[in-house]
Length: 431
Image (cartoon, rainbow, N blue to C red; front, top):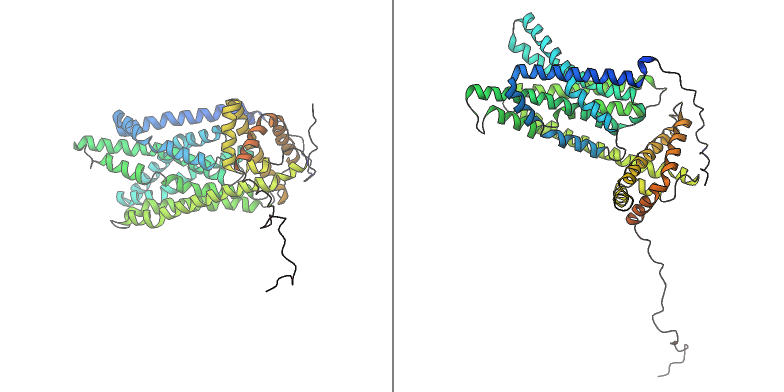
């Protein structure tokens, strides 16, 4: 049995022994409290929506609001495919947005709007102020809480901008899902009272605006908060002020975007379409480009950082290229499924995620942001890779060979005439 290679000596930072966790920090206690909180919030939300829309309105709203959810979750999962976040993180984010954040928003918005209406005796002004000022502050803060929780308690899985975008967008997708149930159920109730159920009904108009035209609205707002947390995750620990100010700045930007969107209906008959076409769509496209570019940069990091482990003997020479190419990864996974079995494909996915985490950790150390437990984490990641090497290397080798352009064959010069042919010596020609 072969022994593992020596660990790379750079950088050296001994990790202190981990302290014993208090009882409230134990995983069982935290998971139980979190599941209980989300379950109670979900039950209360269903009761509130049913009270406002009725049972039929709740069912209609639920059936219509589910349409954009698979599209949004698939899009965020696709953005995160270079280093996929654990499903439990995305499940928590979606549940928090759909249950806890929505409950906080409904209670706080209703209470604040009623208080403003009773204070100023102007219901219309209170509704406008609540939609353009109160709602963005409350809703974006409630959604940002999920990003903060993942950032604090799943720090090793929150390493950059893409992770922030995925968690923030998934939280906002859950929030929009519950909010769409409320709006679509209320619209259905209005149609039932007016007897209008045609294509021009309130339900159809609400479905078109909220589900067809702007399913990305809430994710777009909250993504700014996620980007800020992602930048904070890349910031060295010694720059504490920057690590605090970045998330606050992203949250304020998300609130501003949300306020502009909610207030677009008060900018005139075409205000909504102007804000949608001139501002929201270009910003959405710019954010997509930023996230895709960031993902490509993360793949380049694999090609730049992993050769150090090739030199130490932990990785084979072709693995940095195979792991830094999404096409090579896809071919390797197909090979694993067809020739090695689905368990091998799952192991390969874990191997790819571990290698990505290792490259990110190595880059942090090279840039001077060395975590206190650098050596422990590096050894754990390298040991995981070494354990799975027998299963993953055939598939990665196949992926690298299938995507690497073939080297050009060496050119051999051939004379234009047979070797036996010789020019006559100079001067031998006679007229």
